[in-house]
Image 1 (cartoon, rainbow, N blue to C red):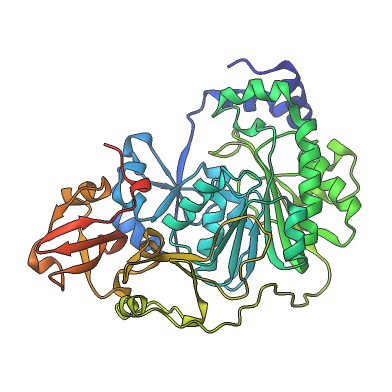
Image 2 (cartoon, helix red, strand yellow; image 1 turned 180 degrees about the vertical axis):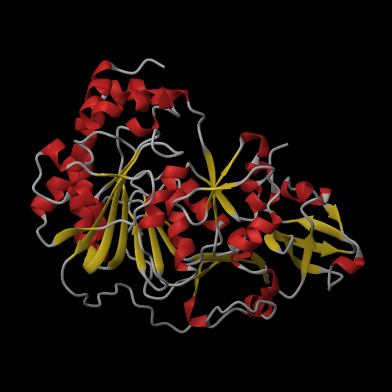
Amino acid sequence: MELPASFVENMEKILGSELSEYLASYEKPKFTGLRVNTSKITLEEFEKIHPFRTLKKVPWIPNGYYYTEEDAPTRHPYYYAGLYYIQEPSAMTPASVLPVSKGDRVLDLCAAPGGKATELAAKLSHTGLLVANDASASRTKALLKNLEVFGMPNILITSEMGDRLDRYFHAYFDKILVDAPCSGEGMFRKQAHMIPAWEKQGPRVFAGMQREILDQAAELLKPGGMMLYSTCTFSELENEGSVDDFLKKHPDFHLSDIPWYEGFCPGQPKLVNSGFPLEKCVRLFPHKIDGEGHFLALFIKDGQSTENKPGRRNRSTKLPPELSEFLKDVSMSLEPSGIQILDTKVFWMPDGIDRCPGLRFLRSGLYMGELLKKRFEPSQAFAMVLKKEEYASTIDLAASDERVIRYLKGETIEVQSEESSRKDGWQLICVDGYPLGWGKLVRGTLRNKYFSGWRMNA
């Protein structure tokens, strides 16, 4: 691969005598990874049931694994059950490092397509709130799908700039992730097609964007909160330079230490003549770890939190009889006060948030389903949130059962009487105990209700 001369020259400034070792890494294999959804399955259980021939732990990611392309993980039913997400190993680091706790209010400011948002939501484990935002409205569609496949009900998916979010969420979030748009130098080894775009725009353009985004994020973080800034580039303008600029403008923030692992490298304040302890930042290089390039900085906002919760829910909803009847078969905790009906669509809203007038969003809370002609039709998202034991009638198929693939392709399948506790009606279809979607059983034939937009291609 022919790298731009100016890029190589700058890498020599960053790496010094290690430049040749870095350039040699372009001959290394490219690493593929998956991250387990720990809100659905434990690591111990995943390691027992996974179907892959070769699976090796990512040393610095507790729930990250390497796999080989021959394993084809996106063709396995467990992928459709939301048990794991395909993600480059270094890209797993930001969401892993940000210390999210149950009950936190978390913002992923540049969230699409959802690789990091899904991990943040998994850490919340159906508690608190995740606001997953991306300025590109078209990219939020993939973001929504990935969060729904992962079975996340406590979400608000928005498409706004940070200053617009500040109108509704000023000093609101406990944790913020800013995985900023960048020049992508850290991905050249894996995606050489990014080089022409780098030559056209370069780090300076992105550094300006990053600093504006960080300034906006600062207003959204509550005192005492933590913000993780990350890029997949090497440029000191976008990395140490953006951190130095932010700290100069925001004296109420300071850097926090990041957990250290073998192969991590410290930030380099000398590259930008900074007086701040930028050694606390982390750089990842492909000649040091089995992954691509990345940069991370973890900030803490000084001060103590004061509660500031927009849109506090205070409503009493009388549920339609067809919805009440369906929910008799659901044991998942869904307090009626959290249910909101808009026209024919039914939503469950997480605590502490309601629809904000004027805010551009794709989804608020869990889309439960639709009221149609005196019946309730549950949504695909509702199926993915449930556990097998939380619905009264299930059909649980083994991953090796050919009917699973047929179901995922949208086909009608035949069911034996002993495979369901009911002869007719709604069924939660599972693979090895993990929900995939809905079906409606009619005299031994399952009418397929798997969402058409998610179906497996032939």
